[in-house]
Image 1 (cartoon, rainbow, N blue to C red):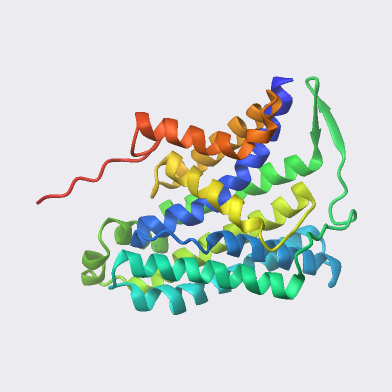
Image 2 (tube, rainbow, N blue to C red):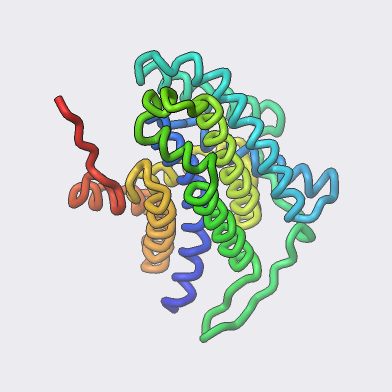
Length: 291
């Protein structure tokens, strides 16, 4: 049924959107693709799993713990791996990002092993809800609800707070923003912190959705979220949200149509088709530079 698949797609797309927001905010501020972002998402899933299994926290406290740890990780990674290279070439920063990604996934493999770890059944008891002929699980409602709250919170921070105004100024021109008295380093650290917190929450939600947490789960999820950010318009926060939802819905519809073997290919094929028609993405804007 179409409604059933739409709900499945929105739940999956909400998680893609959460991860994509981290990519798009960092790119919008310092024009860097943070390829370690998928591993921060993976770390959030492991922190949530440990919080539930070893410390017996409920899923909401576990999610807060994952967000807190990922926030610290994001700030530390920015300070150690990216800030010293800010005035270097784009290639240097890109290689540093890939190096951090490999380091984090290798560390997770060493600490937790190669086998996927499930969440216990008691972490979030799933109930089925019948609505308009569709079966919606309470887990899907949790994912959609938490994602919506986090995205609305981000939109409020960016549009209504002083630090959000500083983020928008730095994204326009960080050198001019620095001359106007804005602490650019603080703004960039805050951007990494909030993007990493969203990825941490996404990691816990994906771990619950697929009931599996593994050292390499950040690779494909990160690539798809990056595709969602580009699809929506890299650097655009509403674009990342729209791109994630669009990608999730189309992927699920493709699987429902019988192309489950090509579910990963569907996401990237859609990205290519959209960029052929609109190279800046769905909500991206062309940047004009004076020569």
